[in-house]
Length: 142
Ligand SMILES: [Zn+2]
Image (cartoon, rainbow, N blue to C red; front, side, top):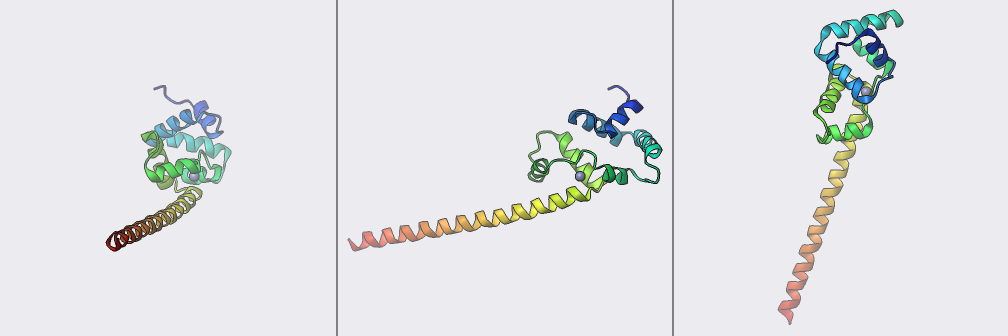
């Protein structure tokens, strides 16, 4: 893999990169603390008064995963492990409040729909039981 230049990092910060490129850069930033430092230096030049990478991320809201991605993350069905680790990083390291709120909302929604599904199964079962006992009674009578 090519070492990242400041121009790459600038492009990343300006959100000029394709999703795959951006996530590959994020991956490298995660693995190489010196890149994080360089990123901070670039941003310090532009954005005086910002002190942590998390703050920068939040401020620029860089590449928040989409709601469908968060949903897939929740269900553990994201197509690639990179995406999963990116979202984990985004939520846990960056502490993106926007995504945390989105995720909490999705969890609530999925719990509700599970409850609804449960209730439906139960009432279907009840109906089946009722029908079969009625059927049984009919047979006995005849
Ligand atoms: Zn986010």
